[in-house]
Length: 226
Image (tube, rainbow, N blue to C red):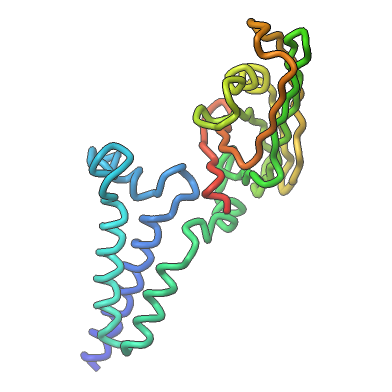
């Protein structure tokens, strides 16, 4: 009987450590893994060299995983442990995003960005007038309506016109009702300061954006939504 209780504690502890290891790499709420944010809060860098080098979050998450599997091995056989390991390795980092958004998410944290259905395009005529339109697709998984603004991230690749486009779209307030999905179209028009960029045009999709509702701001990265 005592052995069964001890084994049960090992199993519970093992699964708890696997869950914590997964949450450490979960990166839905922030643009970086939750573990990076936690390390930053206690003054520990997440990377050995700025945003590059050795990723300490990945190391801590892997250590928690290994310790959790050791605890589970007190009850489960080798093949089962291998299955646990493979499932943990390939489980998407934003697996529970929809559940979190529909249950707890409020404001910008209830929103999902559709990068594959979002585009920006522009044309410049011979007088140096730039006209264009950005289309952004968002889904509100929350239980309340959300009003927010959207802007292209600073490192989005739309050439030297990115700043001008942001100046024209960043103050536009978008609104989504609860459980609503919608494509927003924001048009812009800007006279370029120099005539040397006449008769040009461009288009971009699959970009990163930053959204804000006046209180909270959230980066939504293309790679994290795929």
